[in-house]
Length: 213
Ligand code: 0O2
Image (cartoon, rainbow, N blue to C red; front, side, top):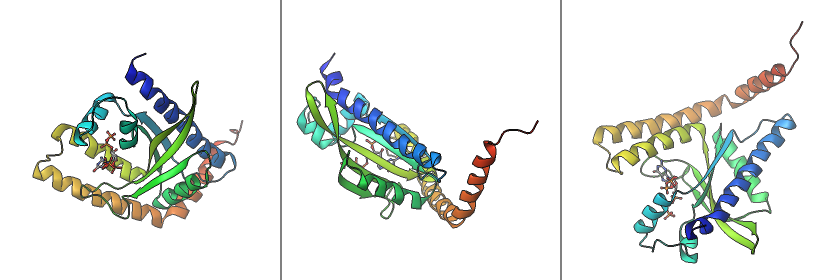
């Protein structure tokens, strides 16, 4: 195993464990016939090429080190998607109550969206991973956002990859207006939240009934 593989292994373990635990929250809500604030969960270990880019941006040395582990807080990244903005706050409260992780920082890009139009809530956590050499504390970034925020962010992320942040004016204007549309979509959906929940509950209950002969 190379030194990067060895360094990244506990991050992989942290992402796998956090994904299982967060998906478990969703299952628990569903099994108790409650609407889950979590729609779906994804996770990844930051690819080496992105770690390299970030170390260059931050003027760090590209080598597995305690300094790097401290400075790059999103080597382990987990993303939680919610249907409604209110669900994001429910998820944050659930995270705050847990004693298997420790929140070290919160970044609210929903109240204070980024200049790009990016909206999301980031929670940096310390998560203990058990290894054969003992416990290792891993920093992980949990991003919590609505489906609309996620849609916008994934599109902007792909475009950013192509244009390296230097968007042509027209694309920039379109992205800004798409960000506003995503914001309005979240607002509109919030207004009919209880109606949607009722419909989803009705759908789930009836889906499970046996078909008549
Ligand atoms: P990737 O490919 O998702 O890993 P800091 O690390 O504290 O110096 P930074 O990097 O701005 O400052 O941290 P922050 O604000 O917590 O953002 C980290 C991650 O949030 C990014 O990781 C993205 O995933 C997401 N993000 C932040 N701003 C934007 C944005 O304007 N557009 C999109 N689409 N995503 C954003 P990476 O490493 O940039 O990318």
